[in-house]
Length: 139
Ligand SMILES: [Fe+2]
Image (cartoon, rainbow, N blue to C red; front, side, top):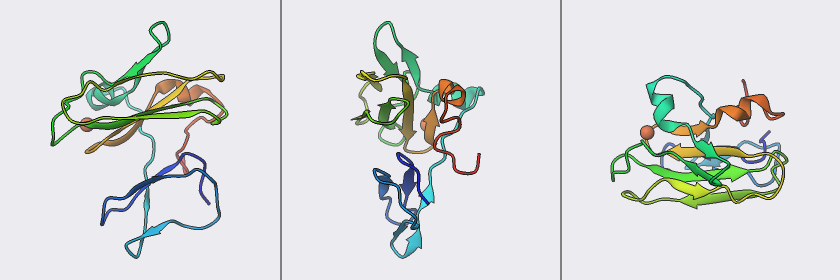
């Protein structure tokens, strides 16, 4: 069973997919089950570098402070409303500034970002809304 907006990775070919429609099946790629990318939250140094920082006054989300080199960079930042009806993704290349406009009109602001090495991280505010540990399955 999948949950809308969950992200899965194939550890063989690198495919990264996001759920747009929930279903009962397990996702398989290259003959193996894909790995669910759990959202990480942490207040340690790693978390400090990876937590998306929401600035409602400037209408931006950023992960400034994280490296943006070819070897280690933020691949995308995604924002979505609490009801997940509005979802916006901005992709980045190395050397770019990992910042995007929040860009949401619906209620609630949630932000996640994906680092090519340290994977998926979420804004701490997501722990306080109805999605709680979204999209952690076993949290
Ligand atoms: Fe990282």
